Image (cartoon, rainbow, N blue to C red):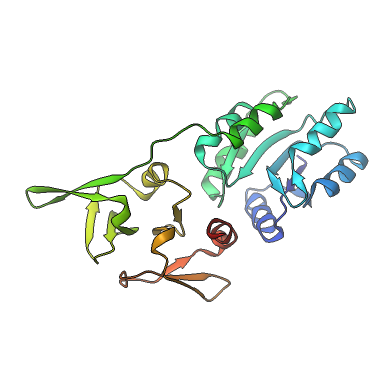
Amino acid sequence: MNIIIIEDEKPAARLLQRKVEKLGLQVITMLHSVEESLEWFENNPHPDLIFLDIQLSDGLSFEIFEHFDKAQQPIKSAVIFTTAYDEYALRAFKLNSIDYLLKPIDEDDLEVAVDKFKTRNQPQNLSLDFEMIKKMLVNPIDKNYKKRFTVKIGQQLKLINIEEVECFYSENKGTYLHTLDNRNYLLDGTLEQLETELDPKDFYRVSRKFIVPMKAIKEIQMHSNSRLKVILPSYNEDEVIVARERVNDFKEWIG
């Protein structure tokens, strides 16, 4: 099975390569731009599977496929999208690929996507609907994000507005909301569920343990192993560290 990775961030490409090869597969090359990809496809047989990032340094990766479609030499490789776009822009990816993987890529999700590809009996012969995908990315489905949370205090219920949140964190299999006035409240559900309920423009999951809002970030410091440390106004029970594989996405998120 021939696999290539098209990803403009070389550290992210190398990390994905290691994860793919842990599954016993071989990545034959990694490409980092539209121009580099066009040249490679002109001179090499099409791979069985492409891990495809959307936004490359010199344009959208769709341009690669459009170029060969116009030349009547369509790329018929299977595609697994790798993207930082939120889930409400991803409906198009589901319709036009084997699967999609949301960055930072989870190894379990990667294995499921690869298994899905392996179980296909026929070549994909994929015809990507680029225009639909572009429209979905520019005009994602409207989403009503959480504006408040209801927490239980003894026999009473308390409403906490989203503006009062300093962070969400997990601890001892529980999920907690920490407020700007330095109080902790136990929530139902998980951080994974919260991620789908929070506006991704305002909240970012910096690690498996923490989700932080943009407005609550007081300071960002360099930390060991190329990581970042986030300083919040009152939370000090544990260090809020941006996981190394999420640092680049985090920097893009904060602008």
